[in-house]
Length: 298
Image 1 (tube, rainbow, N blue to C red):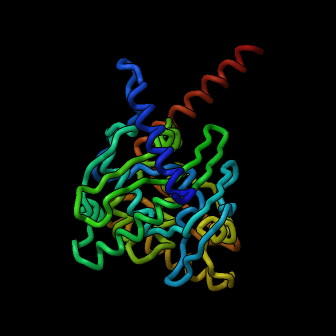
Image 2 (image 1 turned 90 degrees about the vertical axis):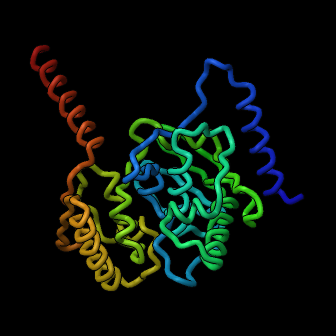
């Protein structure tokens, strides 16, 4: 028995034990039941190169590699490199399992996953789906932020040959990535419109996590996206095209997104999501209250 197989069995056993030993009055960990037009994804993932912008033939195997990420997020990864199509699949699994106990198996099918992804059920599409599931199965990810720590794979799928119902499992600890303001609801219509442009998809995810984005350096976006484009001038060209495509896709779905590239900085003006608007209002209200307290103390 390989070390990875043994680790998977121990993880499944631990999950079953946790479910069995949980008191009846303690609710099982569940993802929020978000609305259909959206997909919930962790900010730490969207603000990093875990699902990198890589082209055909550029995928490599990583072994305990530090992944580029925004300040305050520490990531290491072992496994076959993931890309934006793998993120689509992971998001689809999370979407199917929303409001389902994370410490319990979820039975579905390859057909249901392909349908959730908007992909026609064919032999080649099933073969591609199986490869992507295996990448998510066999990876090992470590995430550390000021709010939480997580170590494990991204999913655990069984019965990939299609002869039996597809069984999906998630590490219950994954719930830490979806606590409070640690995740973002990504507009899936916009992302689907950006299909075929991984850089535009990555930018959409990254900027979705920011209610009021600060200016970001072009080189920072190159590193955070995991782009293999070495030439700065070439990446700037690709970045501009991707941002234009993102602006058009956003407008098509009634979302505000405008950008300006000036020198080495990218400035983005976007409309916050309803959740982000509430967060900004709460933060502003807290600031006003704090200001009143300061004036009163004088």
